[in-house]
Amino acid sequence: MLKLIWSTFAMSLILLLIPLREGKAQTEAIDDFLGLESEILPEFTGPQRFTKPDLHQEKDWKLTTEEVIKDSKEPHWGQGHSIIPWSEIDPEEWLSINTWIAERDTKDTQPNWKLNQRHMLHRELAGKVLQCKGVCFIYRGDQKVASQHLSRIHEGDEFHAEENTVAWIFLIDGTLVRISPETSVTFHEINLSLKETFFHLRLNYGHIFWHARSSQERKLDDLPETDSMSLPLMVTEANQEFYERQLFKNESDKLRLQSVLNLNDPGVQKQFEKLNELIHENNPQLKIGTKVLVVTPNLNIISKNQSFDLVYLLSGKSYFKKRTTEEDKFTLSLRGYASFEVFDILDSEWYEVGVDGRSYQKLDDPPSSLQILELLTKRIKSLELAREIWIKNFSVPLYSNLSKPEILAGHYGLSLWGEELEARYKFLEEYTRRVETTHLRSIENLFAKKGMEKAQVEDELSEKLYQYSLKHYLLGLKTRYDKEKIKVKEMNDLQFYVWTLRNGKL
Image (cartoon, rainbow, N blue to C red):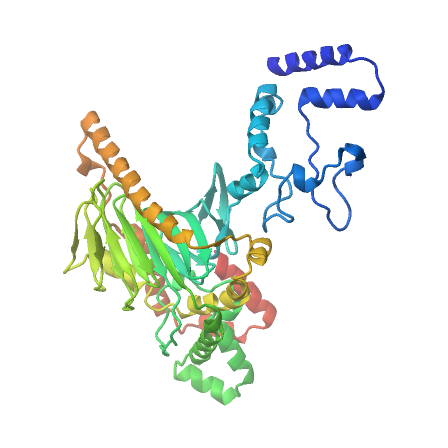
């Protein structure tokens, strides 16, 4: 506050010393002192929110906007015209003449400073929350916000699922990510090129199931869905009940009674038919593959078009399993400054990585906890149908404009990468290995300094990752054909909408 008072007093003295000239000259002198610059923005259609050039320019200056300020004609989608971070400004620093001099010197030596700043401040959209049953949070910088259906996931966001919480995240390429209870994941990067989509994630702790999209048809399976805790979905057309209601409206009383007596689920077949129909419809627009680099403190996994489970126990071991049989890339790299070896994982088996990240082994008899985690994502037809619906509505229009950088940036806020994407991937692979190795070394030194046994702080596999979901699934099997379940198909549209809201969010 004292600095502000002195700044005000100094400005008052300057104003008294300025010769009483015409108002225009006085305004120019004040501007020179404060360092206020009049930046001319591009012409926009509709009402003008900015001052016109003739208010702060002389015609004989003969300067054009393009010569003074280099900026994009339109900001990226989701980015405002102003790049000033108003919510983060410190008033004392903002009014400091020394700060202005330093910034002015940088801007004068870098004509593209505004374009560079726009690019640095922009965080691209990675995906959206498809479902959150429980309590989910998104940490964006120092801000923490509650997350729910349709919440956006941007680069740099950390997604955290609380106790007894399950979340599904839809990424823009069609990948689904299941986040188990007490799990934290950071979505560091998404990069698009004409050849592939690249993601960079860090599993801070907990369990995730990375479910890559497949272009193959799904075979009819009328067994109950395993991740029943996530149902029903807020995407109404993806739920089995939606198709059961359609059939119920067109059936005679005799057929309705017969389906009840036979304990049939007639909507399952219709649901699979719709799923396969959308898969064929979306396939032509999704021809490029997806590569992901997932990092934990003790391993790196590089996967292309593969589904896998990954568990990292805080200050403990990691476990992973490749869930698909495709021949695409799936590799493992460990920790160590000189550890350059990359291991190809071919078997669909559970593997264990040591606490220090220096060794791994196949588990011939994996713990039951890992097998249950695998069970919970075995049959998820409703989630896969919701994925295809969102792909049709969002991903297909995006990827159909993949070769048009202007539309990609203006409509979707995404940048198009070229050949440099491969160099970025190689850098991240080397950088994360070195950084995580340093982190592990620092933790070991800290324990040694404090005289602590590392085994005392290592986390272990526990029921918290699956207990609530498994309980929901088993109880659902007992009540699969009870009165409350059958009554849903008899609801009218309003009642069904309220039922979806009540059961899909809580």
